[in-house]
Image (cartoon, rainbow, N blue to C red; front, side):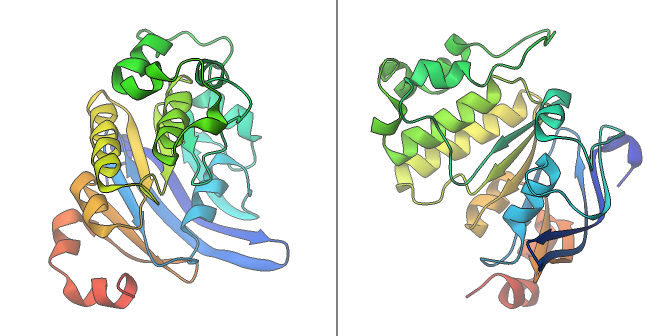
Length: 239
């Protein structure tokens, strides 16, 4: 991948949780303006990779560069201010705050953005949230909480969004809605690194994919290459 097109460059990162060595030299590139999928079975290190990038579980070795800036050892809030957003699998909304208050929590200080995300703009994408404007986050359905988490992340005007399992536990109808939202946000210019358990969803959205196994990247390629490689899919993705 050409360096000029690379927005995120992860090079040989090793991450530990306690004494457990989770990531073993993970390297990947995310191309500007694209959706890139990070795939693999449960427990292979996909979520830890995202958390290492955003600074929740910092890597002990290796390098993470975002838009040419070394972010490996920066605090999470500084990484976010550079333009990386994070939609965690756990959603992590504020259950005792209203939908509107949750969205306002995503606003970053001292931003100067040409076309910033606003609550009205978020509600344009998530009309269900507008109808729940004054409801507390803890009273929302799982799908609505997922939308709220994504909306809150967008309020920070990220250039790159790390999205962890956005369709996990959602109804088929809600999955379709979330997939369309991710596609729309990408088409508006936002780069996305997506962890997704559903291969069909991931390959519907992503142009490139990386496969993980036991804390390592074991395959990388274009969507079409992975679709045509039944051996790799069976070895690393199918249960």
